[in-house]
Image 1 (tube, rainbow over the protein chains, first blue to last red):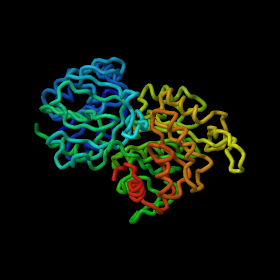
Image 2 (cartoon, rainbow over the protein chains, first blue to last red; image 1 turned 180 degrees about the horizontal axis):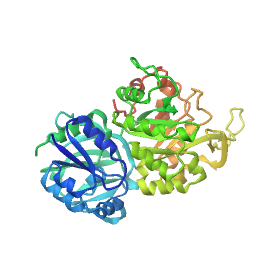
Image 3 (tube, rainbow over the protein chains, first blue to last red; image 1 turned 135 degrees about the horizontal axis):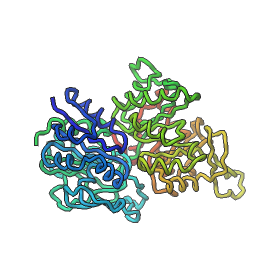
Image 4 (cartoon, chains in turn green, blue; image 1 turned 45 degrees about the vertical axis):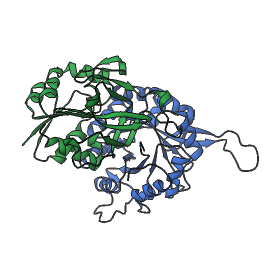
Length: 212
Length: 263
């Protein structure tokens, strides 16, 4: 029986994430927690997030979770979701916030002047809805998932990875942007697998059995 | 290829039950929100919207249990609206498993609620619902029609507010709405199609996504909401509830009209 810690730093609803994990891994112990010790003891860690990144970083530090998150990102299967992806980078334009710096790169806002589709029509921000995720290569977490499958997104900021080899997937919204990164024991996505029906559950199922 | 246009079935809920009957094959309980949600999920719905129309406030907590039960079994985004008056209401719905909360009447009475809720939980989970009615309607009598305008109504379309719907949508975006759910009260229940001029006026006025609602009677209406109304998503209740069309049929029709959908 594997234990999965879902890191709770007080920024909203983690029920969907934990329910989706329980759905794909009925025998796993899924713990929504803000206790650094439980994060340390868990075999796997999910790092979700929603809301504004300055608030997320403040709440994370307010609960003393930073060292446990950084340790997990070095040592065990680690899945970042949405802001949980963005926080792994060095810096965000959102409130000019420093991130955890696990990965080189920055988080940028979709620039209003660039938000046009191929026909010149206006593209809305937040980028909200189901978009295609292009896989840049094979990965254990893409196993059994078709390339260009659609996942549910809702975000106004995107990551610009400082090292191209980090990129595991991208989507196109006005321009191609990185929506999945992978390195060693870390996989992190901009979209919401817990809200992406079959394709999302497949990715989570791959995560709970992943042995990087 | 890129972002798909969304098709969103809407379920009216009162006292913990879905009001309108649904004709899903094999449905044991036509009023059970969880079974209905699962049915729409199977059909390929992109999101679900629950509108709590419970009249008495002491029965309103039932919606929380519904959201919890649905969120444990259906893994697509859930929006919940109806009776949201305080930031605390938003918090409780999000904690129950809602991904977005829709604010309607309370946004008019207290616009700061939108700012407060958005500031706390993020614009991505705050939908402002706007019920609009045409005023000084353009006519087909041959007289030069005035530029059409729409007024915001509250209380299910009963109370006029004097607010211009397009300006109001812009203001709600500025205060922190991440999405606008736009319902034409002239068309709601008529099955004559969306008010496309209204939809387009609002969709072009704001930078956040707009969901068109009110008046859908057939699948062509959904396509028109996207192609002519420029909406990012379309919402319908009765055409899906009564089994006239499935969500999948809706998306296939839209795809045949050149609209990008998730099939």
